[in-house]
Amino acid sequence: MASGKEQEQQGFKQAKCVKVHGPIIVGAGPSGLAAAACLSQQGVPSIILEKSDCIASLWQQRTYDRLKLHLPKQFCELPLLGFPANFPKYPTKSQFISYMESYASHFNIHPKFNQAVRKAEYDRVKGIWRVQTEHLEYHSRWLIAATGENAEPLIPQIVGYGKFKGTILHTSEYNSGSKFKNQRVLVIGCGNSGMEVSLDLCRHNAIPHMVVRNTVHVLPREMFGMSTFGVAMALLKWLPLRLVDKLLLLVANLTLGNTDQLGLKRPKTGPIELKNVTGKTPVLDVGALSQIKSGKIKVMEGVKEITKNGSVKFVDGQEREFESIILATGYKSNVPTWLEGCDFFTKDGMPKTPFPQGWKGENGLYTVGFTRRGLLGTASDAVKIAHDIAGEREAAKESIRSCNSHVIIHLDHDGAK
Figure (cartoon, rainbow, N blue to C red):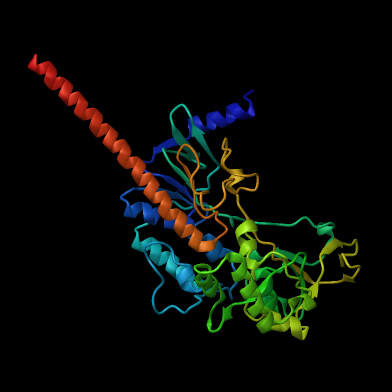
């Protein structure tokens, strides 16, 4: 009987092989589309393998209805093609999806849908990447991991999880608060998603309780009529990072008040420095804070357990009953589930090399969408990857031309004899 390793090798041998003359891109979200567009501009063909049935599946299938971009559109554009001029400052979910579809159409990008990558591995003997889907095996000199840092829902471990008698769902399954009218709902997580879902529940007459397990920076979305992010980016051109952080917190305290008194304790590290070091994004308030101040959104401490009778017990000793629990606990990378024999990623599926150098690995491996810097980071990496691969291709062509030239000269010399 064949061992597990032998069966895997047999699977590779039995799959129908497709030779790809450019890079194989895994993932048809914004990262994959940006990489394909930049490669196309450089004259480099590529193929995108996407496990779902559409582009930008996170946005199309796993986001709530009221979602808008948290940053102004100029900070969320992909390379080579901006948002339509008539789009608002903060495009809606449907507008962003429309932009993605227009982007793919503009650059003639046609991903291969329903092609979940089961395994990708570098063949050191042949010097190629072998990428296996259910029925096919693709071969290429280059592999671009574009599944990003938000590929799969992150589900926390909660003691007594199975004892809860109501509904438990992740925000990836949440559409609107209309289904939760008059319900007591526990929202676990206080990032941008947790805040927005809690606000949405309020507006649909639910009774949200939001769990705040850790410290969190809450900033106004705008300062002095300009986006907070835009103000920060402008100040960073002239001032040290920590001074910019102090200015942001000064304005935040003046406009929002002391959030510590609301149960939202600020980290000791400033918001931009914390984002750069840990990837933890500050919350940009779009109305949830006023609902917390009014008491319509209750702030709770961390969950200790779900008891045998189905109620929720908190670390401060309180115990309450809820009809539903919504996990606003974010997402994680899925690279470890399909990329094998590679030491470039951590066990969490993030590049070991920090930004801005994490876009390139060894043996033709590249990553896009893992910067923890949103779509700006994606755009930056996509441009670098395209230039690098185009340079490699040109160098290879030059090498072939040089070899052919030597052969011709050699033959001419033979003929002269």
